[in-house]
Amino acid sequence: MPVGREGDRTERARAIIRRLARAYPDASIALDFSNPFELLVATMLSAQSTDTKVNEVTAILFSKYRRPEDFLAVPEDELKADIRPTGFFNQKTRALRAMSQKLLESFDGEVPGTIAELVTLPGVARKTANIVQANAYPQLARKDRDAGIAVDTHVGRLAVRLGLTDFGSKEAGKIERDLMDSIAKKDRLRAANLLIEHGRRVCIAKRPLCGHCVIEPLCPSSQRAGLADRYRLARG
Ligand code: SF4
Image 1 (tube, rainbow, N blue to C red):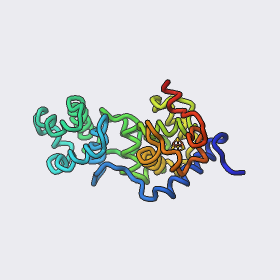
Image 2 (image 1 turned 45 degrees about the horizontal axis):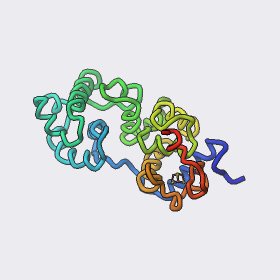
Image 3 (image 1 turned 90 degrees about the vertical axis):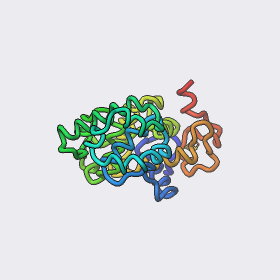
Image 4 (image 1 turned 90 degrees about the horizontal axis):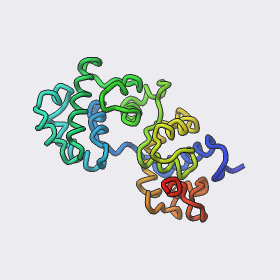
């Protein structure tokens, strides 16, 4: 029987990931980095910012700040000025310095690879931990029982529209648990990048392009099929 718009979430999630993987074979994280530490810093800077803006800033930042020690060696105001274009620079400066301090104190200056260790770093919650692990330590992610799926604004919105969660798009922790229940571990690494890619290109927040959507036959929010948008309904 073909997988439809309703019904078993695991089967629908598998079919959705399969179709998205065919549509976006090169889907990957949009942040530029060359090692786990750079990825961690870039991910922390990306809060309330765009990946493009973060990449502009880190293109210069990473030639000056290469190790945790470098974030502690400069005066706070200098670091603030260096990351200012990413917004919320006061909080981000504090978080970057505290994270660097903890890396030096507890992890010999290296970024750890397990979710349990990553979330001990100041300023690092599950979303950042999942992004760092999935993209910097994919081998570890396959073995880590705490490995999940980074739920950002795109992943949250798509999970709601696709009926892969019972919760609203702001409830990232609960959405992540629903996605972990329905997306097989082997697919989790690429699932977030695929959903983000689709959210940016087609399943846009304000005006989803349902007529151009490769997962339209699997979507209970398809406007092409005249269905209500679950994301808008949940937001009221
Ligand atoms: S059919 Fe429309 S609402 Fe559903 S995933 Fe595709 S673009 Fe988004």
